[in-house]
Length: 379
Image (cartoon, rainbow, N blue to C red; front, side, top):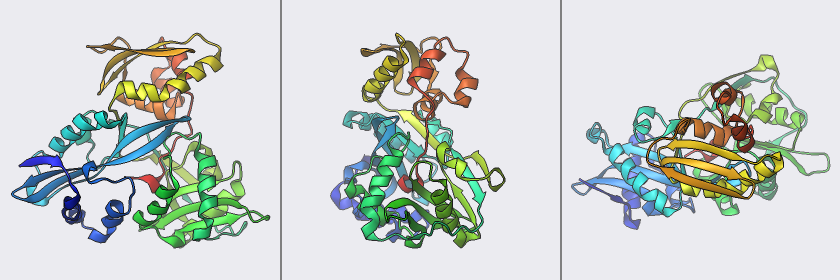
């Protein structure tokens, strides 16, 4: 058995291995042949007697944490050939990924787990993620129409303006946008746009039809334009009898009337610090600005993450990290830190962490966030 990173000549064999997901090889080809961020060395493989029997891929993404950008290693395409399952191969691949990715500039890792226990063993912790299910009546005003390639520049600009302050959203380049439209195998009938009376783009929705409901991949609307948002969601859901499901930030859940929707916990989103110093460096300017704007003097909080233990001291003019061999007193664990990082000091954090001696500082550094990981960026 050999565990190694893939090479250029291995991509075809990786695609063959991925068919054990019981979907056609053509489904995965765009993710590997059209994604400009993919490099063969982003794949780790287990090879036995000249045959690939297991695989993990790192998806190289930059996501927003408040107004900061954080480079993350998205873990996906985790597969083991049926006859080789139960031998711990996925765990071996994960250990290699964890040993190498911090050296390459990845500060954090995200994944969606179908077997959370496997990833918990290697340090990932669950992140609260909400799923909205709703049934909407037909709504024809304002009118919507199918997306065309000519709409893309405006869609890209609206994506940026509506997501720039949302935690969890991916920073997309024009190249990423164009290739994403291919690797998603996106149903173009579910990509709809709506225009204002003056012809400018007012909103867009990306969706696909599921077995019982439409899945909303992404929704972009001008601020406070509830009318356009409802029209787009209604049109997307019409092909599924008005039923839809969506991962939406809290700011967009107000599009639904109380009797139309319900919010439940979604399954499987997990996060893990890969390099604590690199992560702190990425959010350092953001934390210092928040301390300055609060008028306070700052303070310190303790962390006990999978990437190490530390005391973090934050002032308006500096952020310092002091490593420790053991978990400091009142240390935030991996899951607590992930919640604050992406969702902020919301009602859940208030209930769990509100009695901590450093709670005032945590409220300053981690204000409540409008959090979403759009399904269009799922890996």
